[in-house]
Image (tube, rainbow, N blue to C red):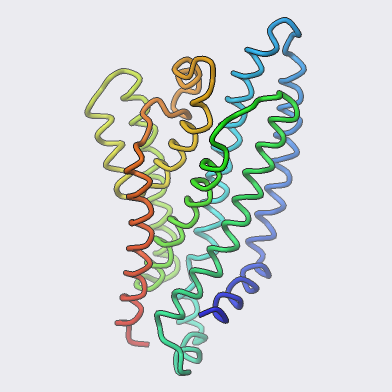
Length: 277
């Protein structure tokens, strides 16, 4: 399994999708830095402490919001054909004929891709945090926990994508996972609006979408963790609007996301073991 993980990691590094993502990420970080610097210069010395705290929190969440999309798209497009494409090309047939279990193949591919995605997510999170802190002086608590949750997002999406790749053609899998991601995102927005206007039905719809795919719920928990130490958390979260976490996911949603991820990896192994290749 370790060999498969190494090969998958190296192969993903050589792909153009990673290079393109890195280029776009650098462009975004440059523009984000310029925007944060320009916003920070507008803060007067008299109101600097309070305004910088609110502005810094908003900019931090904004950066992570777009980072959530970047990490998700990198995950999906990197793993969409991790099994199906190699089956179509005849690569996996050669590997599976060796004394190597199918569980090791799926586990190795998941570990290799997961390692790369976690590294990327951690570097992105650190870059956004450093930029905002440097220009606004914003200090947040719970950063290690928020980082762990941010890294869990691609692992969860990766589990869904790998499972789909064991049973669906590459294009169909990409469409299905993207569709699930959009459903989770829209559901999260609906839940936040529902919490703002005290609409229980909208909140339940959001929770249901999180159960289908907990990626957006993890993002909302990150926002709650990072903004919880603000002077007036409710005001900050309201100002963030649908991007915030007025309806904060519970700790049980994190537990659910971990079990969800592990369960889908197990299902992917089972699905691939039963597939006739």
